[in-house]
Image 1 (cartoon, rainbow, N blue to C red):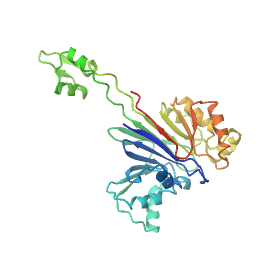
Image 2: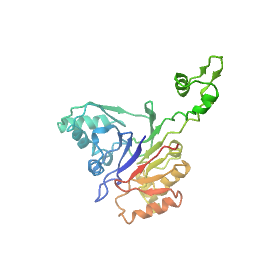
Image 3: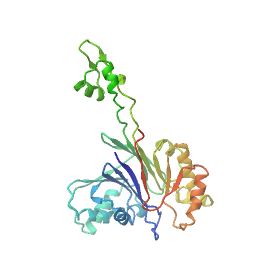
Image 4: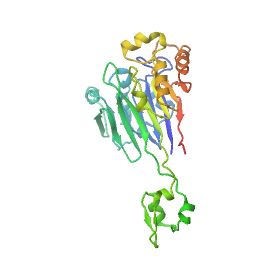
Length: 307
């Protein structure tokens, strides 16, 4: 089962040459999940050959222009392909107003259902396979981080153990694999734990941007396989970060360290830093959390199953 994360844009505030506004894509078993939609998102999707028709859900962190200005174009583009499936868009208050007003003013032609849902703290989306949790952040507007977590898979089934216990091959094996105990002809009861391994952990992706440092973020992103987190400023701009309610790259690294994440990818850089100067952000983060990567536009991460 595939689980890939694509960084579509890494710039904060304004796009600059080679650096589009912040956005990321998760591709899981062919389904696409978009996180934010800044200017340039469509271009990165095209360059990566990611088919927007398969975007089923969009998650918007907050209503600042650098995170939503790519959305109207993406909605109009989706009407140019054969699409019957609804598009779900989740975000903070005023997201629905923003989308509806753009549709009205631009007289958008939309030939598929758009379902907009206002989110609050906690798990707001759950399927058989995964959950998505909204984490309230502290910015100049209501803002949320997102945690996408696969549910644990069943443990491995051991046929040899089933045979040794006298369980005949067939429907009883299936019942055990589905978590049900079975009774043999002689009255012996066999429980799943006798023939199954421990549940196998699912994968976890966390997306945090546009916030001051908050201690509880590390708890929510705990054990993420990948954490994409804003690293807006270097240490010498601490006062700017506090005033604008953003984070230093070193504070993102502290979240990665406390959260015991597998990998931290820095995003949402201030446009004041040239590509060469971005190494300062990485160096200051790596002093705290060595497993830090300086993300670039269209960088991708393949996250395999653990077992």
